[in-house]
Amino acid sequence: MTSAKTQQYHAVDVMKFVCAFLVIVVHTYPFYEVWPDLGFVTSNILGRIVIPFFFISAGYFMQIGRCHKDENYFRSYIKRLIKLYLIWSVIYIPFGMHKLGNMMEISGALWLAALPIALFNIGTYFHLWYMSALIFAMVFCHLFLKKFSMKALLILGGLLFLIGLVETYHGLITNEILLQSVNTYFLLMFTTRNGLFFGVLFVAMGMALADLNQTKTLRHPFIKAAVAFVLLVAEAFTVRHFHWALDYNMYLMTVPFILYWFAGLLQTQLNWKLNFKALREASTVIYFCHAMFLELGEILLGSLYLNNGAVRFFFVFPLTMILTVIIRKWLPFLK
Image (cartoon, rainbow, N blue to C red; front, side, top):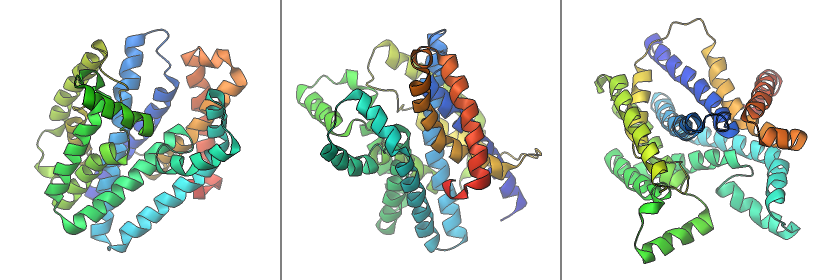
């Protein structure tokens, strides 16, 4: 692999770290009390590009690794993801039990029944849904490509994503039969923010960029990303204005924005004197460990934490960074 390619990946490493920081902002929502519109932009627009970026990046680098090494790379990659997911799932069981216990009374038998459901859907704590979704999307795309083409996968991923948008555009559904079917789905599965409806398209896009070597053919990617982002902001505020959304996890304009933004980063060479590997590893650890401080803040600080966004952020952020350093240095099996 050439040094030029390595430099291109440095920009992606920086963006991963920015995204990890945005995750903390999304989950502490520090601006909502003082400036609701800024809170909406940071949490429900900027924050909603994080997971699609992680998906497309994972798809791209997994495909690069598979092409440059061997077919067994995929198997080892998935095994590592599953191992990491299970370790963190065990760590978060008490945090998940505390959160769910505050919301409803659950018997011991129901806890045991809920655990496998959580592992395969929303995770033992809410942020871990990303890992189950990523594993599912990776395996789905890998198996699909054994029998069908990349073009077919992208088309299928696009159709699945359009179906998933029902969560964002729920208020536009007027047909009673369709509305009842959709509501039944949400009653059982809670969200379309999962590996099937959300993950497959972005993972497939990343794989396609790597497989077809298309990044350099996408001209002026940052300009196109800027246009797509303006349209994304307009879409988000429109959805909010008309109260269409059950949640703001998925937007139509996220697709072109992430495609062009990621392609632009791959074309960007950075010569900064930074430890890019450390940034990349830290972004993963930050995502995993920050959520425990979300729960601990509520336990230790009570209403002060719950009612003040600045308190939430300045409690969670520094403790997350300290634990990230500790994990990277002394607990490498957690990264």
